[in-house]
Length: 235
Image (tube, rainbow, N blue to C red; front, top):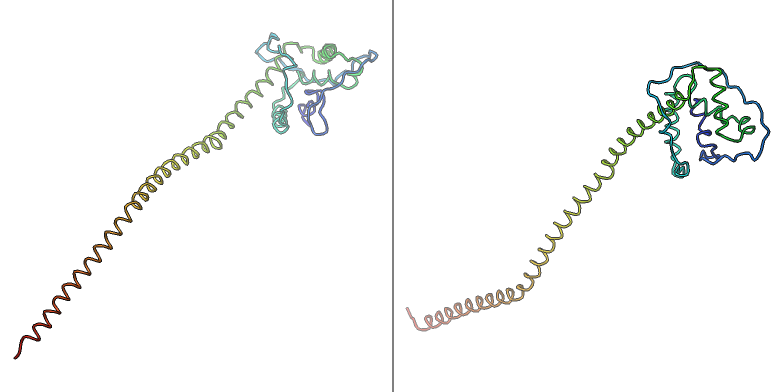
C-alpha cells in the first residue's frame, strides 16, 4: 500500500465503511505521554521554491466533501503515490501526527504536529518547516496538473456529448421549420385546388356533355340526310 493510500483516512480524519469521509471525534480527556518515535527515514533536500505559509490560509468551514467522487479521489491518491517525494515531508508528518496512540494522548492537533515534527527532525536533522510546507505545495501542483488534464478531457467530452448534440438538435429544428413551411405551403396549395376543383369539375362535365350532344346532333343530321337521299334517289 502506498503512503498516500495509507494516509487517505488521515486526510479526511476518518472514512466510513463505504469510503466516505466522516469527522473524527476528539477524545474528551487523556493523560499526557511521550510521543511515538517514527521509523528513521532518509534525508532529502528541500525543493528550490520556498513557501512563506500564506498559501495555506483557508477556512475549513468552506470545505465541502459532500460531492467527493471516490473514484476520482482514489485515482488522485494513486497518482500522488507514484510521485511521492522521497524522505520526510508533509505525508510523514501527517501520518505521525495522526498516530492512534498519539491522538489519544495528545488531543490537540496543533500540538501533535509540533511533537511529530520534532520527532521527524530528530531522525532527519536537515528537515525544516519550509520543506514541509513546500512539499504540500508540490503535491497541490501535482493535483492541479491532474485537474488541468481532467478539465481538458471534460472539455473534449463536452464537445462530443453536449455541443455535438446541441448542433444536431439545432439542425433538426431548422429542418423541422423548413418542413413545416413546406407543409404549410402544400396545405395552402391543396386548399386552393380543392376550392377550384368543384368549378373545374362542373365545367369539364358541361363541356363533355356539350361535346357528346354536338357529336350526336351531327350524326343525327347525317343519318336524316342519308334517309332522305336514299328515298329521293333512284337508279
